[in-house]
Image 1 (cartoon, rainbow, N blue to C red):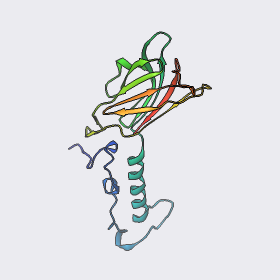
Image 2: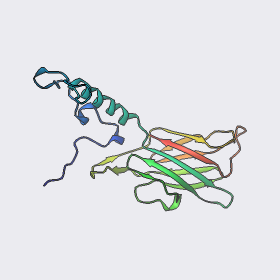
Image 3: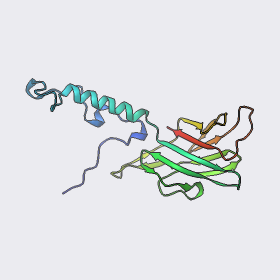
Length: 180
């Protein structure tokens, strides 16, 4: 038995189309017959719609959604509480400077100021590798503290600063970062 290796690129490369998921503009129902039982059958038109929608989801989904806690009271690397990625989910927290294989690392730059470093390439469940560079980043603060968390992308890193409306750094901020 030979293992199946998927065609096309992994979703995070943002190069997938409906054809990567089995869609085809020339797809037809067998012998021109439509769906016999709408509760159990899927017609070519339904399948093509699903392929197109799946490609759209893959192209626009974030690569990483990370919730972390800045460690400013006793200065240390931030604690990554949850890391949801296209390549894996980590529900057990880890310290940013000791990231598990395949997950982003994080370093403390100062109070409320963290830089995340991502790999240049990731592999999917089938071992197909695809290059990735952050293109978008958006972060939000947790809790009642008002403020903002602006992001700066530079190559394979994303820097996030938790600041109050007055522009002061927020100590021990909890932040969720979405990177695409």
